[in-house]
Length: 281
Image (cartoon, rainbow, N blue to C red; front, side):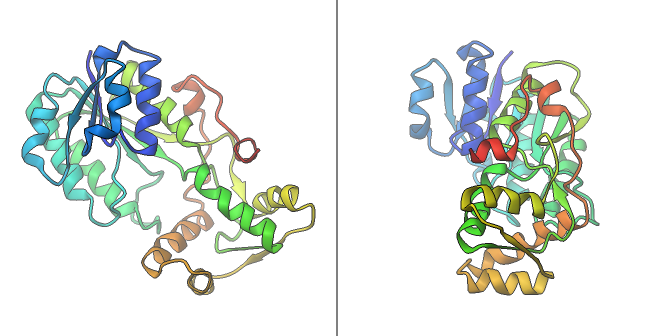
């Protein structure tokens, strides 16, 4: 069985590649990237590395020659990536790929205000309509991206948030990689949508408690509305194009769209999920 991973030189892609190499023979792995030189170390380990660019769909089917299973890692071009994802799915059909897994987000439904939802919903729809066997890996927000928030709260003595009383089951990229490899190398995952989560849902108060461990002093939690939070981000120097997306994640958390906790990492990925406090440590 030959398994391909798109975006394999990215942060999640490398973790998936390394875990695959610990699970299957390198000859069964095809790593796809826009710049093969970034994966020279993996090529030296016997992996096949091929150039593939979603923006140049004419070469994608050839890059997938001989592939049976494929992980499509969503690109970071939020709002402009659906066409590329669709091209990858179409190429998989042309190349004879049997099963495609895709990294999505929990609850990609119209009532979820997270700014990434339209891209993921459209890609999931394309994959379901492709005729391919599919698995949706609906990864929660990455734990690694919360560390700066905790450290900033520790430094300032205050945590400002628009997540209200909501919570999110943040998950590490390594845990997402484990779940992805479990799907790619296992059986019985076709037609399934898995929420990939950390071990528990984390609230603003939990963030403050973690910041208190660092600061050694109480941390004030200040809950604000979306407009005030956006203004605060701009004042803090966050580039304005990124502000609506950041605000949208807090709104999604506030509405409970990211709070569900599952056993997918342990059951399918074969490892205990990493708690946010353990990652911080």
